[in-house]
Image: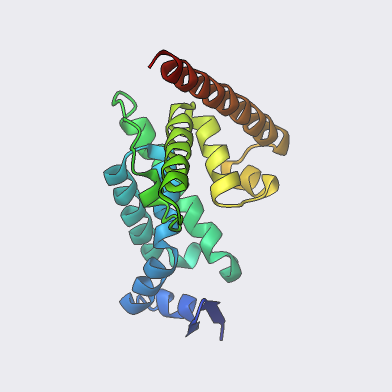
Length: 198
């Protein structure tokens, strides 16, 4: 018998119920992990509808193959791995399509309200710039950055999920950060130049 607790919700033996194909257990994991998985998929795919589809497909796959979950305490990590794999499949299938960065990243990430309007506008601008910069990264860097910073996974966990060496993950994180820094610095410089000429 297992006790899982997130917030004020406590559910006994949710894995066992999933193995018995209890749809209420599936709905519970969808409520508990859906937003985080959607954020991950959105950052990887750059399209809200494709991200929603990837997450829905992932929940269906998890429900059908719950017996493949080896360590019941790692349900969340197992779901993230399924979502990442689904996103990879979508990337390969739709690699010809150009996804446009969404200006609604703050909304997707469920950011907390900021008191002052100026501060809110500045924070929104920074988040949109970061989101757009992440979307411009090559997929291999975007994937590592998303898992490390937004899903708070360790380098060793990322290496295990992506079946890479830890050094490869570290190199991808370093290159991704470097590219992000260059893009954001260039955007800031461009913004300063625009205001100087206004």
